[in-house]
Length: 145
Image (cartoon, rainbow, N blue to C red; front, side, top):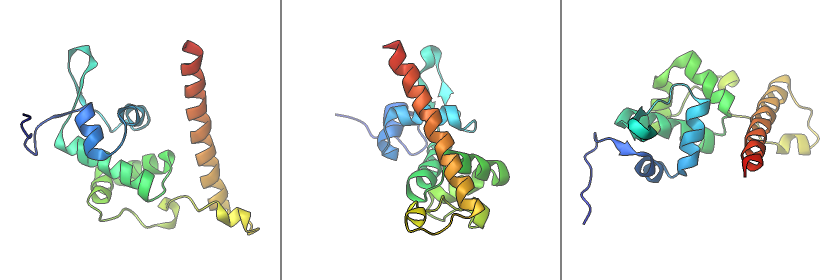
């Protein structure tokens, strides 16, 4: 028999991952990319997430997975507007709708033969940088094996 935790109880990384619907390694990766994600750590490095940590992570997940933001786009949004925009995204209230903070354009624009705008080209370059960073990290991990 498991006892349900209260809404303000600390969550382990496995509990946070289940609640957010993402794998644990994604939470660890986001921690390396977003300096504002700082779970409490106990001896041995065990992570404990507070309610606000979970809500900020929920906002990050919404922006990345549902709204199409890049990692750099979320970093910029947080830098310009703070945690309130992430908390708003977590609550479904949406985030900033300014064109420069909008999600990356769909790649179908380029496939349709439409010329890329400078903004779209910059967003695609951000995505490419993110992918190259992830690939380099995977290569390093595979080299250790």
